[in-house]
Image (cartoon, rainbow, N blue to C red; front, top):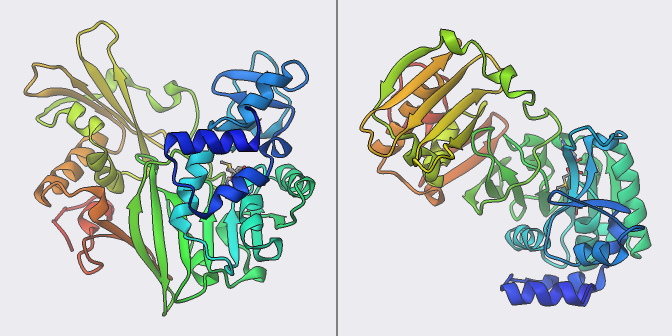
Length: 388
Ligand SMILES: C[S@@+](CC[C@H](N)C(=O)[O-])C[C@H]1O[C@@H](n2cnc3c(N)ncnc32)[C@H](O)[C@@H]1O
C-alpha cells in the first residue's frame, strides 16, 4: 500500500523504533516533498511516466535522490552525482531517536533538503519552534513550498549550516542531516545550556560514518559519544575531494616500495580500527578494491584529499607481510599503520569508548573520559606517543 500508513507498516515490520514519531510518519505525506523526477539507487523514476512506481518509492523505506549535480541540467551522458536527497525514513527515525525531542523544544535543523524532516519536527513541536537551514537556495525555497503544501510552516532559510541560525537561538535540539568533519562551535553557542543536544553525522574523509551525540554543558562546551553507522552526504562547504582516480593516483612508477606486517584486510574490515585510524587521517580517504579472480586478494588504497600523496597495501590470504607502495610528501600507509598500532596499544577499544568535546578552542576526541585525550592519534604527524 503506497501511502503514509503503508510506510508506517513497513517501518513497524522492520522493527524500526518509532518512538513518538509514528503520528508524523502517518500524517505527513512524503509524496509532497519529492520532485517529479527522482532516483532510487540507479533507477530513474519519473512520476509522469511511471506514477505507480514513483508512489511506491515515495512510501518505501529507501533514500530517494532528489537532486543531482547541484540541480544543473544534466545530459544523458553525464555522471549523476547525488547532491540532495530525502533520507531513508528508518535512518531519519534513528537520528530523531538520538535527538530525544521534547514537545516544547526549539529545534534547528542543518540541511533542509526536501523539507520532510523539518515537517516531521514541525508536526511534533509546532512550526514556530523549528528552523531549518539549507545551503542551496533553490532547494531552500522548494523545501519551504513543500512544507506549506503539507500544511506546516517551519522557518526554512538559505544559509551555510556551519553558521547555524543565531537569530532563532537558543535551541534545545540541533540536528544535522549532512556529515561534518568538525562540529562547528556556532552550534554549541546556539544550543541551550545545560539541556541542549546536538546530533550530527560525523567524521573525516577516512571514516565519516558515525553519529556524534553531544550534550551541551554550562560553560560553552558540548560533550558526548559516537554511535550508529550513518552514510549521509557530506557538507557542501567545504566539498569533499573529488576528481578522476588518476588525479589522486599518479606517478605510480615513482612510488616507494616497502613491506608492512599490518594486514590491510584487518584494517579495512574492522569498523573500530577504521574509526580510530580515521582520527589520524581526516584528510585522506580509503578504498578497498578486491581482486575479482576468486583469489581472496585485495588492495587497500589510501588517497589524500589534496591529491598530493597516495598509498596502497596489497593483501594476500597467505601473506605475513604485505607489499606497500607510497608516493608524495606524506607516507599515508605509515601514518595509517602508526595509528592502528596506537589503537592496538590502547587495547583495541571499541568506538563506543570514544568521546568528543567541543569548546571554543575546537573539538577534541578522547577515550573513556575527557581527561584521556587521543592526541597521539589526532595531532599532526611527528613523534607519536600514546595518550596525552
Ligand atoms: C540528505 S540531504 C537532507 C535531507 C533532508 N533533511 C530531508 O528531510 O529531505 C542533505 C542536505 O544538506 C544540504 N547541505 C549540505 N551541506 C550543507 C551546509 N554546509 N549547510 C546547509 N545545508 C547543507 C544539501 O544541500 C542537502 O540538501
